[in-house]
Amino acid sequence: MAVVEVSVVPIGTGGPGLSSYVAGCLKVLEAEEGISYQLTPMGTVIEGDLDRVLAVVRKMHEAPFGREISRVVTTVKIDDRRDKQLTMQGKVASVQGKLKS
Image: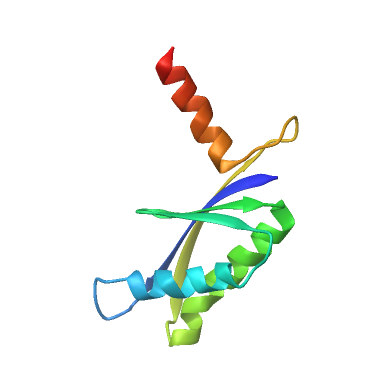
C-alpha cells in the first residue's frame, strides 16, 4: 500500500480562490471505492494500492480541464514501502510515539 500526497493547481482561473476546484478533485476521490484520503491545507493525502491511486490522481488532474481550464500543474509525492504495511495513520502514530519518548 502506498501513501501519496497530491496537489492539483489549475492555472488561469481568473481569481485567487481554488477551493471549488479542490472540491471538484475530491468528488473524484469520493467516487472511488477502497481508497482512503485526507484533505490537508496544502494538498490531499491518498492511501491505497499504488496503481489504483495513480489512476485516481490522473482523474483528479483531469477534473479542472472539465471546467474550461487550459493548464493544470499537479504535484505528486509517493511513499511506497514494501517491507511492511504503510498507512497514513501509522506514519503519524510513529512520529507521535517518538515525541513521547
